[in-house]
Amino acid sequence: MISMFPADAKIIAEIGNSHEGSLGIAFSFIDMAARAGAEIVKFQMHLPEFESTKDEPFRADTFLQDASRWNYWNRVGFSLNEWILIKEHCDHKKVEFMCTPFSLEAARILWENKLIKRWKIGSGEISNLPLLDYVFKTGAEVLLSTGLVTQNELDDLINFIGENYDIDSLVVMHCVSQYPVGLEKSSLHLINFFKERYQCRVGYSDHSGNISTALRALTLPISYLEVHLKPNDLFFGPDVTSSLTYEELEFLFKFKRDLILIEKALKSRDELFEESESTAKIFRKGLYWSRNCGIGTIISERDIILRKPEQNISGFDLNKVIGKELIKNVEAGAPIKSEHFK
Image 1 (spheres, rainbow, N blue to C red):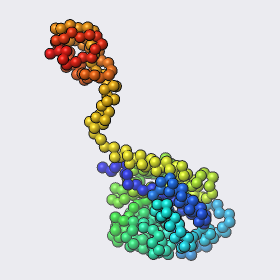
Image 2 (image 1 turned 45 degrees about the vertical axis):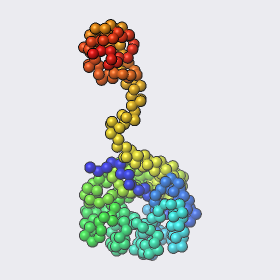
Image 3 (image 1 turned 180 degrees about the horizontal axis):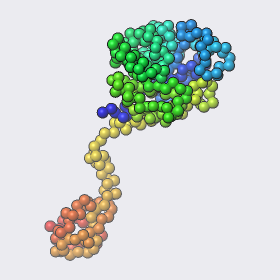
Image 4 (image 1 turned 45 degrees about the horizontal axis):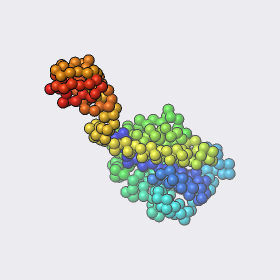
């Protein structure tokens, strides 16, 4: 049976291109993610000459200073030396640097310069077979988003990966490529569907901007949860509506830690009772005399009352006491003791 609280799920704080080409803002995002508790922060590497055409349309008409998508990629891109600085800052903050390549050339830069240790491939690159060939041949883990692929195409692709590469390196990332994704479209049932269909690890890449989706995903059998990060709701960029705030990310990590504790809470009923036994003595009712009775009295139900605290004989033993013969005089209100009767 699949565990409902997988303690090994890693949370990725997606920064993407929200840094707007500023090294300082990129560092600030890393600091936010690290302070919230992130294990991994993720950027994107876009090299327009290798991934785009000059008439590529914008997804959102937001960047007023950029005449084209090509101009935008060039403006927000970092040099290799800057990427190295970003990686070093992540190391300093003890979070893993991750970066999605959007071309084979970007993947080579990341891998050959030892910047990353695992891959995240975006939904738009799922048909980029040369890129997939390169990343799988590195032997590193590959997180593959599914937001822009049909079910038949995904079936064919997973079969292709299984026939040509190490399927154990694959993590199928459920994803809905809408910005933001409404809760009614989140379709988290696909997590279990993919896990059972492909017999591989599964993750979830969230674009809802709603912490409820991420919290629910953490209770499913995922290996990774990716959420976009924003400093606040007034921050600039097309990903703001699809992102979580720093405070929400911080709460998400607290929730994950709590889930881990819940998962490890496997004590038996007897073990739990033993830890609460002193409280049980106070809260549970025991047997007391309801009236004065003399030696030779055959104890009946009317002679007994149940009161707290449980002192000598538990309420569970009521029927064992009824019908016994008193061998001592007893007083009303006193706790019943086994020495009172034969």
